[in-house]
Image 1 (tube, rainbow, N blue to C red):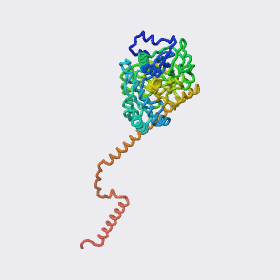
Image 2 (image 1 turned 135 degrees about the vertical axis):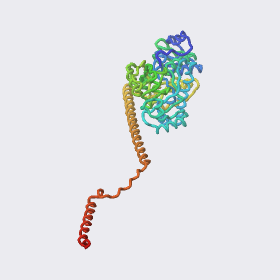
Image 3 (image 1 turned 90 degrees about the vertical axis):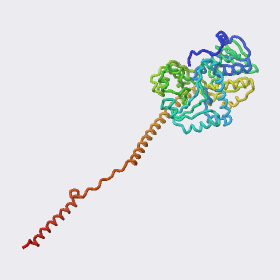
Image 4 (image 1 turned 180 degrees about the horizontal axis):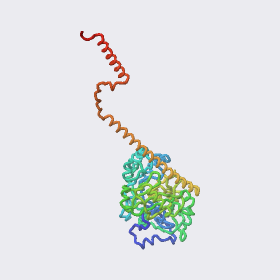
Length: 499
């Protein structure tokens, strides 16, 4: 993902500059969206397509934070594991929520075409790999996704995973053939271009100073103008600012750091055959090939802001740990973005009070949930769609402030440490099993050879001889011979010769 990616769309440069200017005059609209990220721009696009007048207020510029700095993987699901989702809301509601997440992914695929967003760089497939040997546990999950949640997935055995990813650190995998990835930065700017084309007005460098949500017409104050709207959608994540600090404090800020390597040439193809995105089941690493021979890799994270360049060496070491055959990897670019993670692990979508809506908490959720949230809120406002109530069980929960940040960082370190320990133990067990199999194979082969070897005939015994008789037997034989000789002499005396 290049930091210099141009904005997609066919609008002229003059029109683009005019549309992206600061709000400097009072304005009345049907819907005011606070935040020009993925969720906010989707609300604006869908509401404008349905005929509403829409204004988007952005304190900085389109896609400046996490929405413009992500790996671009699109697949169904949520940050909350599917079994925990079922436990929380019940089987039927979990199916409905999962269906919504699939619709979000389909929505992005519809928009992310070369015709609408030139250079979007769509590629297919996503693979989730395990750091430990959990083949038996994957079977029930695959059945659940395939049969009950109608999601196309494939279970990959260890050999197939390692055929695609030349490393011994991964075991089984779950492959999502319907998932895809795109240039995330180009997508958010392409979304802004589509929203403007549909009639939405986007004002950048326009922070919100205050909001009065009372009454039928809500009032929003900016540094240089006032705005009135029937509905306000808060889609600013953790950066909603002082007027909405209570809402921001329901999110734990997570800064995720990612890098793009210098070109790696043929050695990359020898290490990684799989062309989709790869993520491990512990959430430690997420990567994919870009530009043919580069790696885009996200791994470290913190609960405070830091200079992304500080993590270049850490990411290079992580790549070398997983794929040592790549040798020393040069980092060409490092970037980061802050996401808001909820305590319950699900996005915050719904109506806080009449006419005041929220779409946030997309940390660890995926692009599909931001698209789904934008569609859902626009249709709720303009068509009375009530499906947003499926998210009612996931209320706004305080994230713990500074203590929550420390706790979140400690938990992240524990997860990474536990993953490393479990992975090392799994690899040790695999090596031990391999040695045992080799020993057993050698033993079986030795037994087989022993059974099939022809019996050697025994030679006939030699006739007994005095030399070969035991000493005791020989002595007795000598005594017998002596007695015979003595008798012979006596016989000569009794029978003298002829007279």
